[in-house]
Image (cartoon, rainbow, N blue to C red):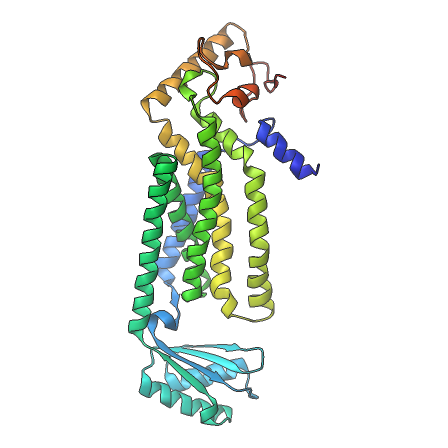
Length: 367
């Protein structure tokens, strides 16, 4: 078995791991800082909306001797607006100019033909009205709202409302960070960006549901035992699925990184940036929020419940009493007298990550 596979097995058994729940305030603070930065960037710089949303014209020219910078200068002088110029694979140019109507588009097309030394009829012009962009934006927001509502309903039915709330917060966290990155780097927001945003929500939700499912199974009959608190079992659930989450995220990020850094950066296919940046940032943020935000939030919400709060109080009292007597808790103490394990067979066998015995050694796994 590979080292990563061995680590994954040890994490699943609870032999090693990181105390995600115990250090949750660190990650909450980091997420708040990143989110504030994204919101400030969005408020100060705004979004560079593509012509699909603000209206304008797209000109496609034949191959010419002029460089990209020269064509950009020609387009901005002719239109009086900022222009985005991309060189296509066959040497032709794609020029985007926002805020143009039909008459202005014709004028710019004529001047471009003269400046570039090509026939006017060989420059293709496509005009996009602002009303069409408003319709696209409205449909995008509607689709996002419907998606969020369906996610909350499904998770509330399949799991419980606390998990639904935590997942919703994690999704909003991912969207905010991704949109903030777009604002800070100045990439153009197009229909491809919207598609990327909707796609990353599915990836983020997948990782979150995997951990939630493990947590749901691990906490069956939790109040019938006095060994592990809800937070400790939640921590074990995160560690048990950690390697799986990392593997799926890395595999998904590799092709997206190829699109963003090779296709968009090295080869200059700028249109790939529209969707690849949202996918890259969103996938990374989704993996982060699934591990460091969603499940710790569930633990926080769950331990406000009276029965879980009372369970934690009994467990801590039991541990304090055992420590005072100079005893260590045995795995046989995992359940109250007269009750079965009720889903705690595996949990009672191994130490919860981060928990150590009075003597400073990890609790040993019983055969």
